[in-house]
Length: 182
Image (cartoon, rainbow, N blue to C red; front, side):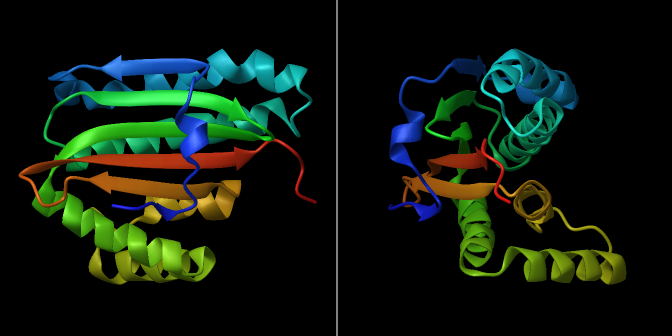
C-alpha cells in the first residue's frame, strides 16, 4: 500500500539510532517511558549542537513521541518485535516505529489515520477531547497522534503492508522540524 500522510521514505535509511524490542516485550510496555527518556537523552547533545530551537523542546517531543508510538505498537500489535529508529534528515528530527499487527486491527487503525491525514488536526483534536469527555476515554481515538501534531508541530505518516494477509506490518513516522517555524 502507498504511504498515508507525510511519509518520507528516505528518512528510514541509515538511522542514527536503531532499537529492536523483541517478541514478548509487550508484557512490560509500561517501561516505554524509560525507553522514551533514553532516546531523548541520546539526541540531547545533538539537538544542542545543531542549535535546535530548544534542546528541551526537542527532548520533550522525542520522549512523548517514542512513548506514544511504542504504546500504540503494543496496544494494537500482536506481541511481536517492535523496531524504533531515529534520525536527523535535513532540518527534521525523524522517529520511525514499525511493528506487526493482526490485519483486522490494522484496518481499524488505518481508518483512524486516514481521517487524521485528511483532516484538520486541531479540529479533530477538539472533537476527540469532547467525545472522550462525554463518552469516556476511547482506545484508538487518535488523540495521542493528534497531540503530536497540535502541541509539537509534528508531521505524521504511515505505511501498511500486507493488509490482505492475517498479519501486516504497520509503520508510523513522526517528523519534527529542527528550525524555528516562526
